[in-house]
Length: 202
Image (cartoon, rainbow, N blue to C red):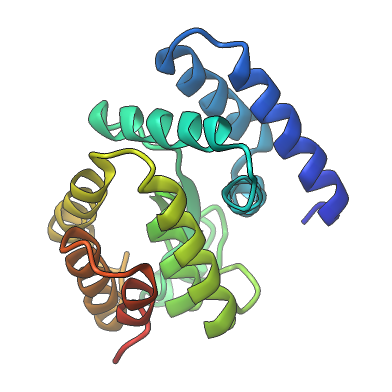
């Protein structure tokens, strides 16, 4: 993970690029290119940059990000990152074109909210994420995304649809329950603190 100072500089550069774009379509293209440049291993850095932007006092920059991500949801092209599956049979321990030699099984792409939740709930290739860091990060992300008026309906619906169609091994039973509870609380417009609590409740 880059240093906090470098992440803040990168967040400022991203906002500067978004500020000169004339449409949300262009802003989304900028964000997608930015995520692609970070690579699969850099998606946690993208999440951290979103958290930095969420703490900004520059409302217009935060709104650009929220509106662009909402557009990506409508287009079913949400910025996403890979995490290894929580577990699979012995065959997953072998190097295959799908596993890339990972010890945790097949890799799956997740949007920002799902990525953060799977990272917290399941054993992945990432270092352990504490409950406090998870709840704080989740709350900040949802607060940022909620700056788009339709996000409250769009993203929870996307999460539930993904849970129904996800391949076996993508989520543990506990993760499914927590994502569903999170989506339900978010869609019901509950306070952000309650949404975060729903995501950690057993």
